[in-house]
Amino acid sequence: MYRRLVVKLSGQAIAGLNEFGFSSDRLTHLATEVIALRATGVQVAVVIGGGNVFRGNRAEDWGIDRVEADNIGMLGTVINAVLLRGRLTALGAENVRLMTAVPIDNLAEPYIRLRALRHLEKGAIVLLACGNGQPFTTTDYPSVQRAIELQADALLVAKNGTDGVYDADPNRHPDARRFDHLSYQEVIDRGLGVMDQSAFILARDHRLPLHVFDIDRPHAATTIAGGTPLGTLID
Image (cartoon, rainbow, N blue to C red; front, side):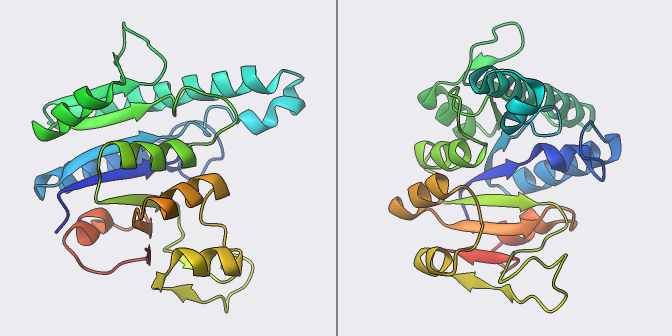
């Protein structure tokens, strides 16, 4: 049984079947999963992506500077976080805190590590937006960074429609094999695209366990929190 978990949600998880935008049904599903996870007694923080609003790596397509593009992407994570906070509250969740790496005082608290720890210890659901406030990173790196900073027992890497790590793209190769368990070194040696390499190396160096699972599966996060193997465990 884990004591504290960080969940990484992509913007795509909120968009659902669409590449961009928002899905009310998906938002409800995600909020329900987060509420159920906290109900198990686990302290829960959620790092939220913004790829459904804007992707910084499309800067060239839009003819804008990459730093500016990443700033837009960070603001996209705030939109998603406010949406998730609203749905959590509408579903009856109490004590939901939104913290941002870039100060936006009218909407959220600034991310301060010790304050976030205090919120978690009091049983709050802590939503973390704006990545780590810096350009040139996806949500992968801040999710690992926050999990380490907040002394989480593991990082739950939520995927959309993919129930773990495979030896090939399962959408293109029907015979692709899913791994139940991998070591950090095996992921590197096999060249498996679990997350950005810098984020993965950070997780490896700090021995942070990664659970890669399908967020579309009902009760997946609570199953993992309860100690039942699901998806792929990397440690």
